[in-house]
Length: 78
Image (cartoon, rainbow, N blue to C red; front, side, top):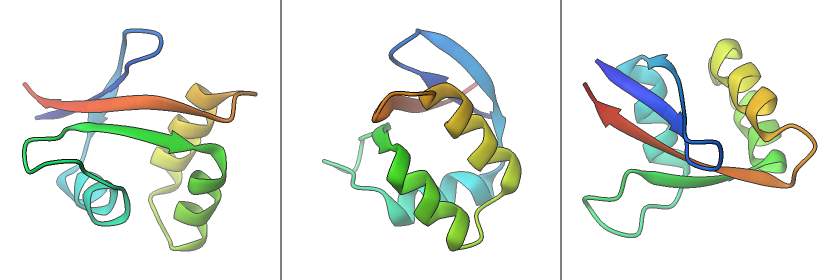
């Protein structure tokens, strides 16, 4: 299973689907092949929503970014 974490709050958020992970990987910058961290800006979430990303993932990211400009997330295989 693939689990998404909020690095800023050190919180395990929820399991994400392989499709949701593929969307993140294809639309966000990775610094290396082993990179599993993403800084996601609130404006990026707007773009993700416009591109048809999962409404549940968009809601989760917005909820965790809150009133901030963005937040740091990572995923792990569990």
